[in-house]
Image 1 (tube, helix red, strand yellow):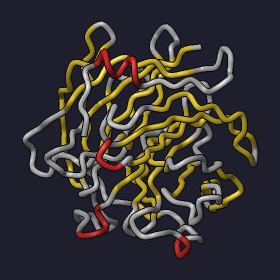
Image 2 (image 1 turned 90 degrees about the vertical axis):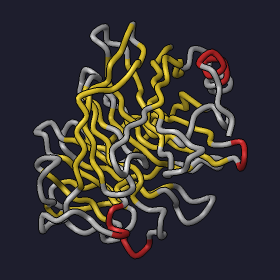
Image 3 (image 1 turned 30 degrees about the vertical axis):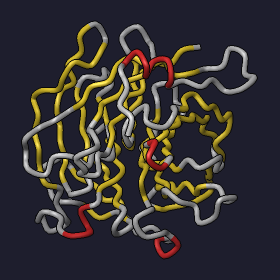
Length: 294
């Protein structure tokens, strides 16, 4: 896998949407490689930041939830501190075990409720805190249609407290990705996202502008991972105004899977992402940050 300097990343990362004069795009800001000696560190597949972009929460493929603070210098990520690691619990208050640990999506409601989507058992659970027992949510009616190890990768919550989740695969190269929505205690699948090229959804978040931001990745063999970010306008039963705002060349970053969208005090939208190192020695846990420009 190719590891590049920040200057090379800034040059290589952004591909503007073809023919879209004045289109929005993401501009590279910084990258930080995070290491920690805690047992089970790595495999982070989700990311949530506070409104000011300072404090973060992330979950791992092995049933860990971590919180901390991002340290910036001149707007660039320079480190993390105040770290706390806990084991994600089941509804009985015991740590998750075996294939049930595969936490992929994360969304935190304004009231602090934590929602986590899982890939191994195709479900979403709710938590009052990082140290509490899970609360079961209504079962997804379409669980039997989801592929093993490719299900509820992305999870987001809108300003009204409605949850949105989507599988990593749609079941066919020409089939849109279904978006499952939980509101008023019931799931629906009225929404979908177009499937384009070889990218697969892995993270989602609603930005301060009300748009749904979607992180996607594609494995390009030995060249590493390519990443893409699209954003959509949310309407009642449709996602419209599709914008591709980032597409990186393979190897620019590691396996980016978690996405958080927030705004600086000046009102500039930033997109922060985290990579899943798959617990491999040749991969890295990266915190990567971009800003939205016109």
